[in-house]
Length: 318
Image 1 (tube, rainbow, N blue to C red):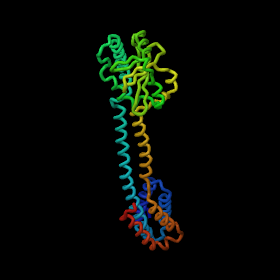
Image 2 (image 1 turned 180 degrees about the horizontal axis):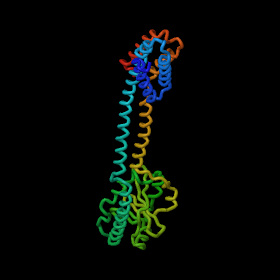
Image 3 (image 1 turned 90 degrees about the horizontal axis):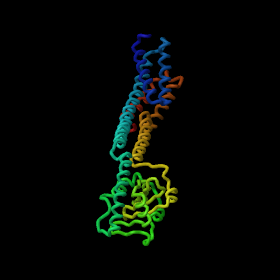
């Protein structure tokens, strides 16, 4: 019976079922494949059986199952492809963010430029105060640094901490129309030739301050950009600030996109092989029928089940 066209066609049905069972990785689909294989072997090894009943079985049942699963597979692949496209777009965005100009090396470079602006401004402020001049002592755009980087690179502190760092006694400061500086701080700046470097930035809400350290000296001071105030800073206060983790806006964006892609990948994998519950229930019922030892004698009764499977192809159930 090897050359029997019905057996050859039956083998083709089996191959299609095998591929679909491997795709969906679903227990009931695999069971149907195995049971169909048993039925095929039964007719293949028993020439006395009516081979036409095998053909009828495939026409009434196997073909409908294959068509239904193929339709579900096509729908699933279309839906999952949308998620994979979103994953691809997110990867492009991640690369774009990582390659953007707003990167950490820009921040590092601008920290040095800002320190130079501060030192230059403080020299000029000293000159203005000494000469009782009315010139504006601060370098242009001295406040731009905090405006640009505070949100993403400055460390968070409490409003109470900000108040402690920016508090001063009026009698202990020099006051100019454009700036306020602590008298002791100005004395130290003159002593050490205005040589300071940016140490870190702190923020609470929309308010930010910049911390500077004297080069080669254990002396720190703050610059409060929104009020142009310069005050000495107690390092013990700074030591209580958590500077262990610094996450930039770009870092956050990249991490969020990576997490999103993980979720999309997981969802796409599930969607790709999902079989609607209604379909699985019907397949389970059909598997139960074809597993009945007497089903071959009642194979003609399979027509009703086949019609239900075919009806699903034309509904919104899948």
